[in-house]
Length: 160
Figure: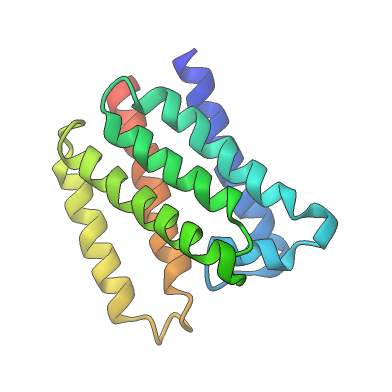
């Protein structure tokens, strides 16, 4: 069951991000893909985030409740996908921040892999330092670092 959930989590993330890059290129953020999808397909953004976050929640919550909070945050991002609208923007931003932040705290503390959190923090710092050179698509890369860290930690924890 653990392997199946892990494969589902990674396949959904890689599949969705791969589709977005192939179709639209690298966007300012993964969330921006919601606005690039045809309106009748906007729900795919929500399904992709939930398809990553639900298996991640099931895998991570028994280790630490922080992963429940992190994955719930990611699921709120999917539920409040239309972040250009005032009514959903706050939920979206808080969910994204909680998802990325709580996951890194969980990785450093409960999973005991502080080195991965340290590397993530350094990468985020470099991304912010070079955001102009990244054509202000730095949020995209910060999200990629965060999702990759979660996947890597799960791989090492469960299969390493």
